[in-house]
Image (cartoon, rainbow, N blue to C red; front, top):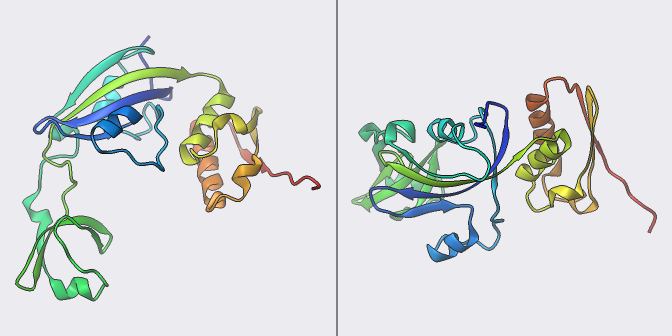
Length: 228
């Protein structure tokens, strides 16, 4: 049956730009290698989507609601359902000196952050730099090739999926999870205790749990250190 808001769904996808046929993102390792997108430090596996959470484009989310586990679909999103049309006012000229003062040596294609906005340098010359602050996919029609792999139903498995989303390097089955009426207890595996930024990750997981499990009032993380 079709998915509803709040459902935990695992999907594989490949994202293409319709106008050029270029593959720009994928969860599939073999596709990434074929199209020159492969990154050795990335884990290629189905992605968690909580329907209605806004983690993916709304146009994609709306179409996912029409699918079921095991189904595949090609979903086309025009610019207005994706990253919007290109806005000429977001392409600005800036003195090269302003970038050099920030320690930036401008070159075409370089991504830069200026006053909290991320843009791409399109041209450099005559002491001035042209920066495009449009989203890289603005004005493009996007084509998603999607396969729905699974729907997660058990509360403990949902929580493991939320943890894995924030800390993919540690397998979800390594986390022992107990779910009570108002309390969730998570035993942190040894290999996660010393992960850089683990405290921020735990705070994010706790926020996710209280968001998707409204009855939960307390999230506890348990770390154990055994005698050598």
